[in-house]
Amino acid sequence: MSDVLRVGVVGTGAIGRAHIDRINNALQGAKVVACSDVNVEFGKSVAEKYGCKFYEDGEAMIASDDVDAVVVTTIDEFHEKYVTAAVKAGKFVMCEKPLAPKADACKRIMEAEMAGGKHLVQVGFMRRYDPGYNQLKQLLDSGKYGEALMVHCCHRNATCPDYTTTAMSVENTMIHEIDVMRWLLGEEYDEVEVVFPKASRKSTEILRDPQIMYLTTKSGVRIDVEAFVKCGYGYDIKCEVCCEDGTLNLPEPANAMVRTDAARVTPICKDWSERFPEAYNIEFQAWINACKENRVDGPTAWDGYVGQVTATTASLARDTQTKQKIVIEECPDFYKK
Image 1 (tube, helix red, strand yellow):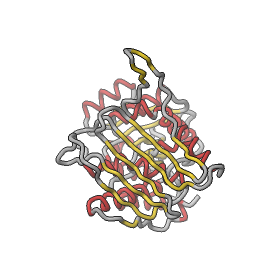
Image 2 (cartoon, one colour):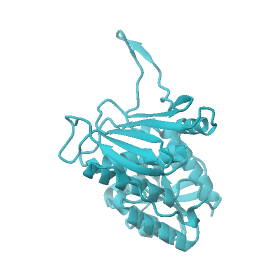
Image 3 (cartoon, helix red, strand yellow):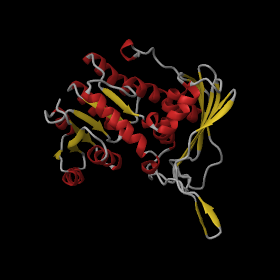
Image 4 (cartoon, rainbow, N blue to C red):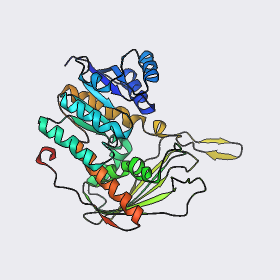
């Protein structure tokens, strides 16, 4: 591997372009040299903008000797195809969440990785890299405030695409909380329930909004997560950990307070790109460094599998309006740290 990690990106939508830009212009030690997209004309325009080679066939790009590592930012249904191709090519791959839309697909990715005998897959659960969440984890792990008892979270988007479904609120939105709470608390989940409060007038035939997920960990910590994906006012992420001897709150982004027109206003973020740029930058710089050191140093395919099983079980709980046990297979030795 050369001094500069040569990266190929499959999927040139908004998140794909954001990652190309950050790798080429904000981070060190890597350069996007190739990209691919099923929308050929659009993909070519992205390649031209960033000065990289365009491939109509994503698997051909992955197999190219000019590509050292791969970033997968396609629609979810294509994740398994391209992650597996990277694994079989022996190349490190960063896959945006979810690892795959079905637990069986996640298992097939793990099986391919284990067959190769080397950790290559990282899942883009970037909140683990956010400085605010890391402050929470340091405080919680210090033991100063006793055991965690309850956690209150909310995940609000100003709006969402018209194709967003009720299931996607769990499997594409609350999947972030599913992963980061498991990481923050350092334990596995036992059961899940999802309930509906009064529906917003902005709900559609395919999206009931908002909804609330209740997770219980093996030790009994109770976590509630509100997903409100058409809240209208901005992008708002909250987390409060209630411990025996204090409460720990996720810091708000640092935005200047403005006093004008007889009002005092503190702006909030409009979307994920404003709220978590530092987390993404830290995540990708760590991934680049780890690839060059021939290792994986972030959320693994196993974490992707656990997240998807939990999200799928949550969807079942919602659709049946029952509590459901979260059944996770025994972690293979390959993924035990």
